[in-house]
Image 1 (cartoon, rainbow, N blue to C red):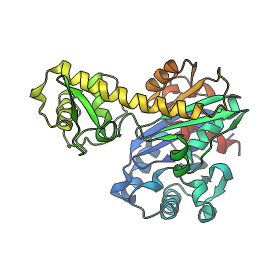
Image 2: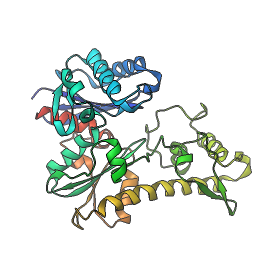
Image 3: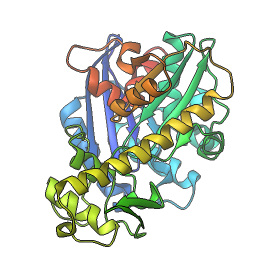
Image 4: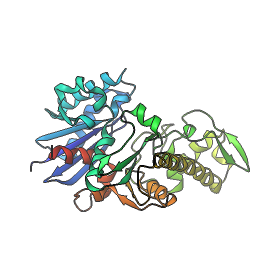
Length: 340
C-alpha cells in the first residue's frame, strides 16, 4: 500500500500524519495562523513537508475555513482547497458524510467539507468500537461525539448544529481566552470581575500550573512577551486589573487553578449534555484525543467511565502514539483515504 499523508488545515495550526501500509509512522504540527493570510499557509506547508516527507496521495480535511481571512464558508473551503492543490498537487478532499471527493467537486460540497475533521476521527473510533463517547480537546475547541452501534451518532454536523447540540464546545487547552472562560474569579478572599481584553489565554494557565504539554503552545503570547512562568503570571494578573506584585506565587497558582477548573467544568457539562441523550450504554468508555488528553482523562474520572486513548484505535509506530492522538483528524483522514 502506497504512503498517504493526511492534512488537517486549521485556523491556527497545520497538522499532517503519514501512513505507510495502514500504519501511522510520523506526524507534524506547525503554527499556521490564517489571519496572516494564505502566504503563511504556504510557508507552513513547506515546513511540514520538510519534516513529513512526500507521498503519492494527499488527503485534506479542514477547519480553517472559519478564519476571518475569508468572508464565508464557501470562500474559505474553496480558497484552502486551491491552496492545498497548489502546494501538494492533486488531492483527495474529505467531505465527511459525503466521503472523499476530488477538489473539482468542492463547490458542490462546501458544507460537507467545512469543519468535517471531527467526523474523520469519530469514524475511525466507530470502526474500532461499538459504543463510545469520543472527546478530542485541541488548542481551541473540544469535540464531544457519541458513537453508537458502530456508527457516528452525532445530532449535529455543521459547527452551528454541533454548537446547538453541545457536541462542540469552544474550550481549548491553549488558545481559549481567559475572559471567555468565566465571568468572575476569586482573589484575596473576594470575587472580582474580569477585564474583557485578550490579556492572557489558557496556555498561560496551564504553564503556571506546570501542566502545559511540551510543544503544545506554538502561538505568540497575548502581549508578545516570553513564555516563562513569570510572564504568564503577569498576564494572568492583568486579567483582574492587577500587577504580579499584588500577589505571591501561591495566589497566582490558585487563580490559575480556578480558571483550569472552570474550563474543565464546561467540558464536563458538555459531555453530560451529550450523554443525557441516553444513546450510550453506561459502560461506554470515553475515547480521548488531542493535546488536552489529560483533561479528558479527568472528565472520564468525574463521569465514572473508563478512558481509552485514541491511539488505541490506530495502528501506530512505537513512539508516535501521543503525537498521533494530538493530530487525530490528520491521522484519521490518512487512514480513511488509504482504504477509500
